[in-house]
Image (cartoon, rainbow, N blue to C red):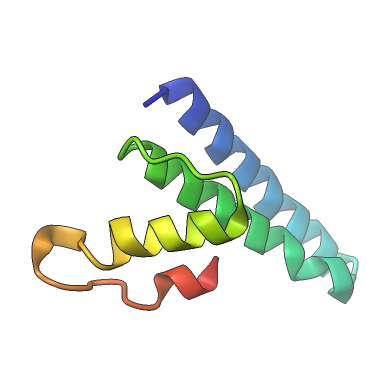
Amino acid sequence: MSKREIAGLLAKARRSVHAAERLLRDDDTILQSRAPMYGMFYVAQAMLLTREVRRSKHSGVIAAFHEAVCETRGGSGSVLPSASRWI
């Protein structure tokens, strides 16, 4: 795990959220929905990196996030069963 990589992904996520806020203020409904999705994608990638899991494609990140975070959280079943659908 590279702390620099994780920090970079979290910075991208922050920029995506800020872009979404600007688009919301400008009433740009087409691009508005994409920016938060990218933010969640970058956060999911960062969370996976903390577990030494690397995926670059959107479908791979969703599948790995669901397996690593949603299904195995705490070892007692799914705490976040639908979180991977938000990415």
